[in-house]
Length: 215
Image (cartoon, rainbow, N blue to C red; front, top):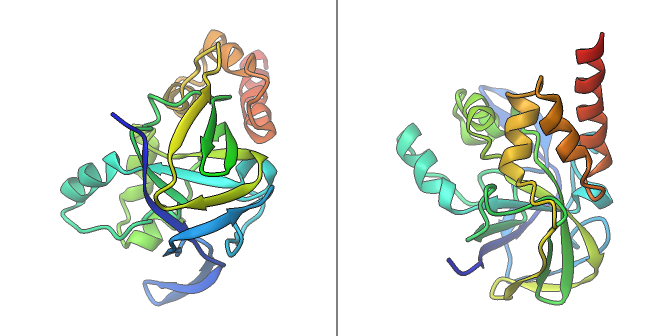
């Protein structure tokens, strides 16, 4: 399947509501025709919790469009893109198809995939579905992040080109399944850590898993 952008979205953190309680998040974004991608984020974008979002290794958030139909069927609802707060809702780039360290040119920008997303409860709050977070963990359909190797303009109709496929071919889905479910598998953890381009936050998480196995 040809890779393509379904929607480009940006947005600053906002005050949102869930079950009559306020929370602040950058998950609510709006569709725009184009945006300049700088080193740390798209112009006009922002995060509320920099501990888990944003920064140079998480400058761009991707989410596969293919999952939307599955979630809508499972939860008997209609989801508004970007339901996961992603910047790029993309087709043809599911977690099983994308490898950590892969490099893509999208419009004028060049982006390298760094890690899977570690989802939080904001996904459930934003979509008003308490089961959402648990199911995202179970499936590994989290979306993923990338860092910017070359800044530039991205448009909603920009072409996506795979420039370089990482030779170790550790997919986002494999990494997710290891961190979330198969975290006692030392061989798989070491295989993921062998990818030098893996985000530092993930290296820290996986090394903690290894340390816990030794104790």
